[in-house]
Image (cartoon, rainbow, N blue to C red; front, side, top):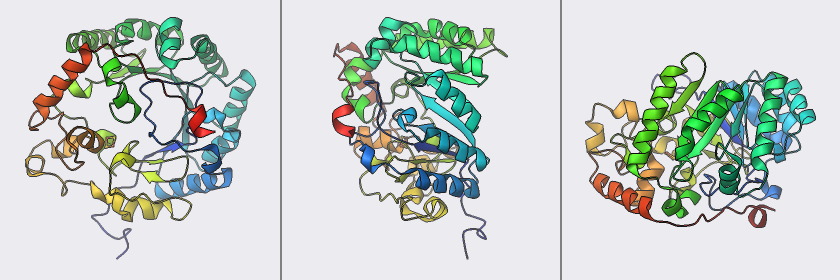
Length: 370
Ligand code: FES
């Protein structure tokens, strides 16, 4: 029986993150890309990405997030956007907004781009530029955001939040309103990959986090119908795990610049999994049949405590990469869960890290990805 006739087969994915390149002009200390970056010469070429988009549409994907690194460093970005449009895929460009001029933005809109998600590292130039380690970046981002509005594309503002910018949440809300964004995503730094190196510089104290969440809640109510604000309690201070990726292999997949297909951004940190490559395998085969996508799909893999928990199909066991980073085993309970034997330990760890005074270790791409 093929998976198409199998009633127990997984649903098709809805979204695909297309990581077009790891190259990036910024040097954020919480960079979520892997420690080992893909070089330019090893990136998928235009024709392969176009085939992948066709396979994604065939599989049932509705939205493609064109991401990186900085996707605008790909000279073929317009052709890739056009290819998404041809396949009927909604395209979202995730950009740092420091290297796209008006002519290029118009060309991207002309090619069929549907949405822009702009990252900001802070709500003011000194903080933004310090975190990105790039003088002048904030002014370029503001100018870009105004061009996005001018060209008529919908805009989401995304800010990764940590100790150095958490106090700016009210200003980020004002900035989003000022720039005409429809959505503001307040994403707490996730501590795997490069961010793990910087936990002692990034981890905020619990009281500051709780105050910030109260401010977000008040802003959400005040701005209902005007601005959507997404924010969740950061993992280390939560009692319940988040449904990472809405469940492993449930709704979305990531394609790396080199063509490996992952169930989540950090999946390559998990030892023992083999990730198939779109150069040799079809996206449908990878989604339905590959061992990596089936490793933590559903609930059968879960430890007993999770299997018997009424939230097992709400949080889907939390985050595998975090379980690995904090316990050494990807199949452990996510220690964010208060039922995990590691829960108290990570809360203590967060308190200790929030009191450290480390400097940022910046992510320098140029030497690794040329
Ligand atoms: Fe890999 Fe959460 S980041 S499962």
